[in-house]
Length: 270
Image (cartoon, rainbow, N blue to C red; front, side):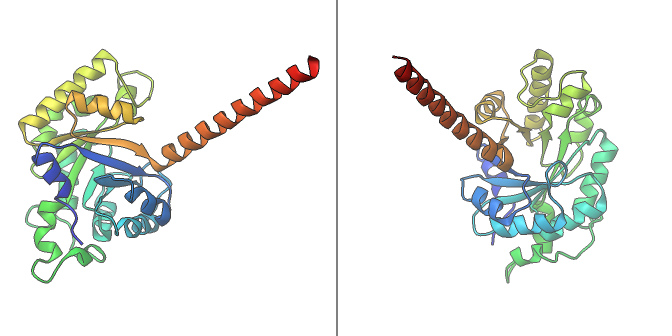
């Protein structure tokens, strides 16, 4: 099985990484999402209903399809970063990275020596290796460190964070970012102040050969984000897709029921 690097290849060739999001702790949900055409899919251990065992189950559900498994960890700390990588993640998204020092620590948790301090023990990830190339020899290059930029402090320290060796790209959390500037915590933002920050992030990552990623609430906004220069866009999450389709279906049927009842009432009164 070949993972990791694939999405960097997309980025390096000038393409856009189309990402999905898993909040439901189900291998079957992961399997369904993996068949929908995403380049990568992120298991959300921070705000999703996911734990370590469900994360592994989601990876197993995805494994039949050529999607790159990512994880958003609950926090940047060595235990969970090492465990999700050992489980088979090929990219770790870490929330609330606000300084150079926090970013350096995050990268060290994810990289083997001499680049970092990750402990050796890829219990499941080693299955991705082959006879001529072991997992450990490629992991530092192929396992992606993706700090989240989602606070005013992180924006102020953006250049220092991006300059940390080992950062492949950044991921924007629009809700928390707006929150930290005194705005409502929503996803698909178009406030001029926030768009100026997005422009800065896109420009600074592009200078360094890194990608700028963003969490989107709708496919329409994902397309808008691409037009702004983002090169990794989360299009939808499993929960969102399920709820939106179910809600629209129920609405359509209820409108039909209401119309039918109206016709019956008109016929009776005629």
